[in-house]
Length: 258
Picture (cartoon, rainbow, N blue to C red):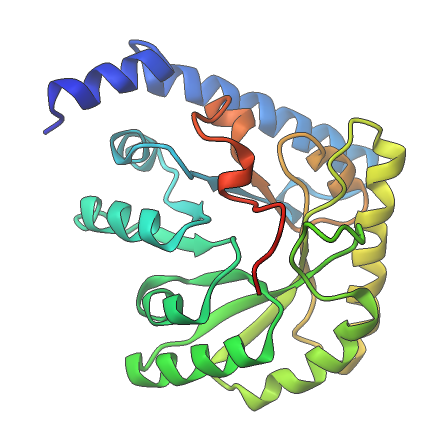
């Protein structure tokens, strides 16, 4: 049951009929996915849309769940834990897509199905240890810094092959592919090379580990270009939920603190 304050916040952000609004936005995104797939001679089912639900209240996710959307991506562990508890009666699949500190590994080892931001072997070892305790497995994407920006997490491209060679040391981690955050720019001629580089790296590392086949790349502002370059998972938040009430820097720190 929602309290009055939560309901007022929901209406202010999403209007009196949130599900109708969000369904229209999701359909708009899906139309763009279809067109991008057609341009690339790809089937629509080759692209997964992962709904990024950071800052979105659990009441909205509950509505989406009952409309058939059961998979959500979160950046912050604490926010994900709170939503998981609030939606414990539902069979939601949670994916973690943001940078993870080692002291938080125990949490995602308990509930996450995928982790899209692995770029450190010491973190891999801690995840392995925690997954052993939980007797679980975790699908992972290796994060690559394809833009060369100091403000972004991820491995330098030339370190990816060596990193992938080390992953069999952690049998609880199941590599799925590579992930990147492209250059943030409205000029797609500058953004596209980030996606192309990730695809080329995937092709090279798949020879080392054939499990590395997927590409998690593309967000609300550039997902159609990412699809053209081979994305298999696109991470969509603002195109569905609109502008967030928190600045992007809250979720993507400009100065990574290693």
